Structure formats: structure tokens, C-alpha cells
Image 1 (cartoon, helix red, strand yellow):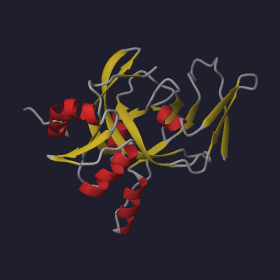
Image 2 (spheres, chains in turn cyan, purple):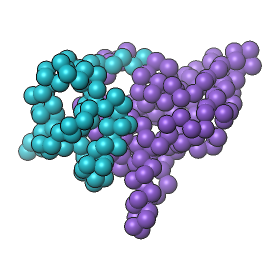
Image 3 (cartoon, one colour):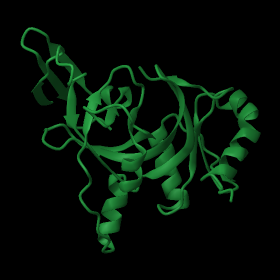
Length: 77
Length: 153
């Protein structure tokens, strides 16, 4: 049986908006929960997390994604 | 400024880099609010973490992330290592350094992946934490010194 990935819907919503956001908010962090997107974008991951907690509470997971044109792959040496 | 000094022998094959004790919990405000309403939070495990200037992020095992009930913020976070590409999960948590005077970091981005081959450590402290500290390795005396401001956040 196939199981849903956590935050799968949020990732899909992010991909649908990636191109537009990359024009207007490149490098910023966006917060998504379900179909809800915080209107504010954030410079720092920690600020995005605080805003997500304020908006969605501590019990619900929410997606935090940094906006880039394509998905970066960070090198870990 | 707080100072923590410890020995490290760079020629010891069992000791691949400077390591310190490390623990993660749900972010501190979450625990504080939970305790107000009577929730209990058991003491977290205290694994050994490698100080790794080659890693942009702090990385823990997926088992530890789930044990500590960290908040998931991204289920698919690709990284590239010498062994190839892999997908991490991204969490938000609070980080402490038991046995040292280094100040707790109330909220930090933490990646999680499986650790298979590493025996000397099971976490990596990356540059998102190291940016808070000044680290010096005295090769002649084989001592590592970390200087950390009391408040960075």
C-alpha cells in the first residue's frame, strides 16, 4: 500500500509557485501548511519557523522552503 | 564569551575529527509551553558529534530526530557527499552541549540522515552552528578551543 509522504501537498504547492516566487522572493524562506501560504517571506529559517508556529501552532507540521530557481544540492564534505 | 577546551589527536585513526557531546530537543519555547500544561519531556540522548567545517548544516541520525520528536519542516532535502547523493529530512530543534559551558541554541535547522559507517560519532555539527563560534586548533599541544558568545540568536 502506498503511503503519503509528509508535507507532500505542501511540496506540490511550492513547486507550482516556484518559478513565480523565484522572480519576486529569490533566496527567501516561505511557509506552507495545507493550502495556506504565509504572505510574508523570511530572510532566515528561524524567523520562518517562528511565524509558522504562530500561525499554525505546535502540533501541525508545516513546510519551510528556501526559494531557488532549481532545487540546490548542498555539498557535505 | 564562554570558552571550552578539549584535546584532539589528529593522528588517531579512531578519532577522525574534534568531537563534543551534543543533544537535541524540540525547540525550547515548545518545551516550556508544554511543561506549563503538565507535559513531560524525557532527557534526550547525548550522542557524540563531529565538528565539521565541511558541512553547511548540522546533521543527526533519522532515529535521533524521531526519538526527540523534532518538528519536521521539509521531508526532502538533497545533499551530496563523497559517497554520492542522498535525501535528508529537515527539522527544527534546540541544541545543547552537555558537559561544556557552550550556550544552548534555542532554535536551529537540523538535517537528518542515516549514519551507517561512522563509529566515532553519530552527528555532525555544521557551519550553521559553527558560525556562532570561534574555533582554534593548537597543533603543537593538540588542543581545540571553542569561544562562544553567551547570546548569539
